[in-house]
Image (cartoon, rainbow, N blue to C red):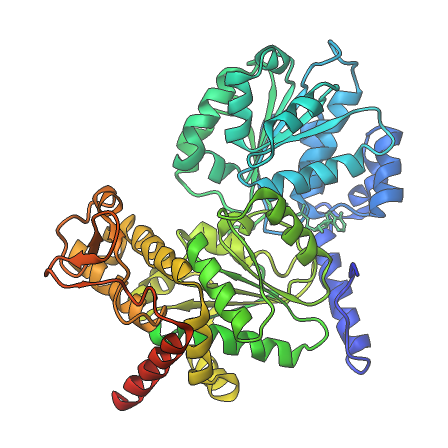
Length: 549
Ligand SMILES: Nc1ncnc2c1ncn2[C@@H]1O[C@H](COP(=O)(O)OP(=O)(O)OP(=O)(O)O)[C@@H](O)[C@H]1O
């Protein structure tokens, strides 16, 4: 069942409703000038778009970012816009983009006239859905081009007119290189939108974005939207925007990038308590909001996401998982299921960190350090959207505590370490959790170990670690989180690629059979052990921990 608003207990309803209504008003109140200029009806746009906003979206007032950006965009300016998460940036760029297209006819039947780029597939699909709703009464087409979908499906979609293409950079570049005629079709582009522009212009996507932009007409209008605009963005914006671009910042100078209505907290939790801590906090949220808990937990890597999801499911918490190791059809199904659910738990890698609009998320948990401060802000922004309340909990290992102290020092995070410990006491059972972890597939645990090493290896300087320390910490994770007797063996090739050849404590498998570590010991991290042995091992780990106090 699709839920439209958070359910309230009957007693709390009037006050809660009033509060929510007030917050929505704040989010949609006109930015500064006030009055009726914030009504959609005051916008000089086509009647067909007005009709969609009225009848399909049923919105009356623009949010501040819509109020401040739509008018200059209708005048044709290039724009960099910053506004907090969940405040309606999607419509802010779609309305002017569509208006420009309907004010003139197609230059030729297959012309691509607007390109919207998104860093993730799920976000691209969501933007395309929103565009289709806005185009309900227009005769314009939207085509989505994202990775993970059979290219033949793209060819089919591209047989029709594609006035607006919403794409991830990799797939768009693939078409540029390999699809006959695609490059020519792009020569009609009038508008380029970079949603989550800071991420698109960052290192990860930069080369693809540069190549795409080279193919677009110079006289296009370009827009860049995000909830975070790091200083480094200034230097690369000239690639996408014309030099006289406007900047609109809907986050006041004195304000923070996050919403005051989201209660933010952090907890410093020992590695050995991460699984139990996560389980217990989710159980607490479920018991406090039995009919409307909706939790997203972000993990640093796809494999950690998979590991914790499997462990939680064995422990009796139904958890969905979404990450890059899943097929696109599975990702889309999971995303749709979580969007429509009134209650649920979703474990996600950063594929859902930005832009994705799941309604009524009650809590965002971040277990492990996010890659950047910006990523923290975007992940947190999956709750507290469109004027609603929300909660965020950042759970860090002791070695990561500096992230909260340094990178988030201007954000209002309360310390909640004792809350996590209290939740563990109330809801956790170490032996039963150890049994659940032992049931997690051996391959998942090996891959989680490898991914963990990869994630921390890519930022050694941030942790002030050398390679020996990295491996020591990884092995601690293998023992305390994955509950393996010995760290799993990694292929020599993988170890070489990570630059870890010769590092003490790493077990290396030289193709086939068991592994040998750099001290010459043999074994394979519990592989091949039966279920009974795995549980016995888990219980031994718990016993050992108790002995060690
Ligand atoms: N004018 C409006 N009135 C009421 N609700 C709105 C309005 N505009 C957008 N919304 C709703 O607000 C929610 C958030 O919008 P949207 O996803 O565009 O936010 P965003 O600013 O792009 O967020 P993010 O920074 O996370 O990408 C959506 O559910 C959307 O339908």
